[in-house]
Length: 588
Image (tube, rainbow, N blue to C red; front, top):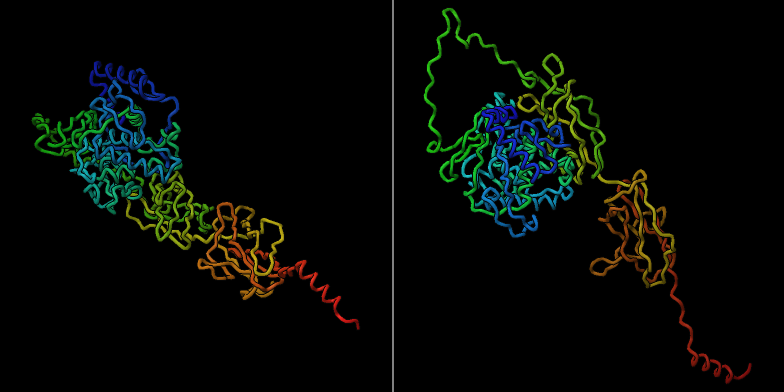
């Protein structure tokens, strides 16, 4: 893509000079840490050098994008970028179609709740939406956010673009031979398969719907624990979307522009970018979203608005006599590394087991091999979590794509167990190649504790028929670390050697105020602490035992003492009366 931009900028000296001046002015006034070099291109002082190395081809497959830069005149600054803030008027370029703008803001709100540490601004989604599709072709969307016609990038057949063979059977892009970027945020099908989200609540994740696509883009940018308020993380996230330095600079320019203010415009009235190239030439999209629309490669999808085709060129000179036709001398296409993969093998992955909430210590490694057992490097392997589980990779997703190294090995990100216990599978498959997948069995076990102790030392006593003043509290640990969210039970037992439930002595009260001597469904808190409800005593005196047992078998016995009620002292009048009676008695 950079080469295409270069060819376009080199078309004339005048064009190059104007572009250089525009970029330099823009970088000085808008884009943070962006400067213009002598050739008019931008560079950053400290930008990420590549996309997420495990993402293969990023969100878009590094498809073409619009290269238009923001106007030099900034929009009127708005007091805040938060949802609900009145937008301000500005230039036509700063306007965002109403439904598209709503989708960006709803996605930001959703990510603020689910991944607050990411600090995703909706203006970043707007910047990417501008660069990828011109804000869904100027807001050519229906009321529910679905584009009025598909937005497709060129087929990724390796001819000037990445080579990505079909991964979705044409379900999203209608192409069963090669993948194409789809929708207003330009996801390739293999990325949408795991990154897709339902943003408008209709139960379907549709890359052609701006609500779904914006939410998916937000989650994509918030993976890998990136904090987008940090410039390095922001650069890395943008580069992972489309691995191009020019792309990074263009998105950052629009991000800064939108941060200074924007305003809502009616759907279908947005201005469409023109600076987009897929074959070294600039193609202008249709002039009105209502009459024609760009298909994502810079060309119109409406025959009525397409430019007329150029006249037929003069016939070429026939080949010399005896020269075979070109198609007979053309060599067969060189097989890609993916084409040579015959199978996937376990690259030494051992037992996969983790306690709920913990990271798996073992990571999954897969080796791609030819039929002769030779390692195949530079192949994309997709790892997918399968089954009724909430386990996911530490990237925050249930799918991860990793490129094999020179030894043919792809190692998945670490897995993190959720709260659902039981078994599930992680399936490794080759992206773009129909070979048998390789399944890895994984197990999530319940949270356990190996030690539980009482936190207090005060003796627990009360009188018969009374209430214990202190509540029992214990702390659970596992391997000397806090054992949080561990299940526990508490039972008043008969004796240290008889764990049956006692039928007398201290007791708890249920919701109806009835006496109960066994509690289940208890759980330690985030600090491993468990405080039991208030204890009461019946009329039985003596020493009793309360046993708290945690998942994993750790237990502690707590001693409870019930003392007799104190005998009431006689009143002074009763004492005087008793003495008088004794004096009046006849002597023996």
